[in-house]
Length: 112
Image (cartoon, rainbow, N blue to C red; front, side, top):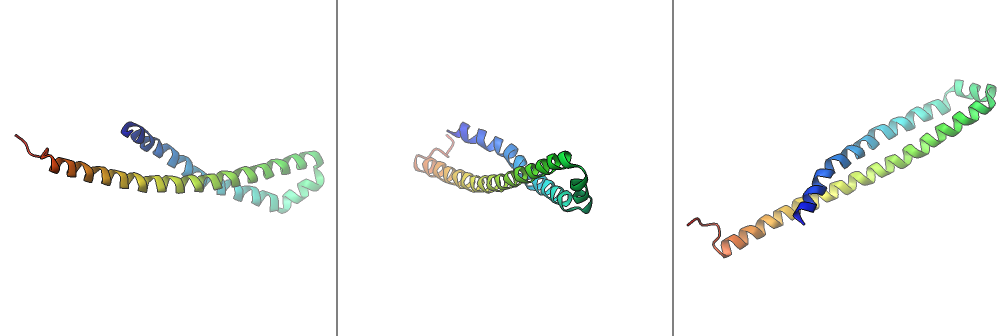
């Protein structure tokens, strides 16, 4: 069980990196997409370029939706990792206290 918990703890760093990338890159993608969609030149492009403008609008909308989902997933992952870290620290403290209690009860801490 300890090996499993240690492996999860090692993977936590990778998962935290993914969470931070979602928290940084998703808002950036949303901001750029919104800027492009609301830019006056984009409205001119839509009027002048029919099929291309529709495709571009669909792609920017897909970026907005995907980035929104990515942002929500990143926030949820970050909260989950934070909760996991608190529970893991509590587990380590309880295990250490239990080890001390057992060692003192059976006098295992004394060297012979």
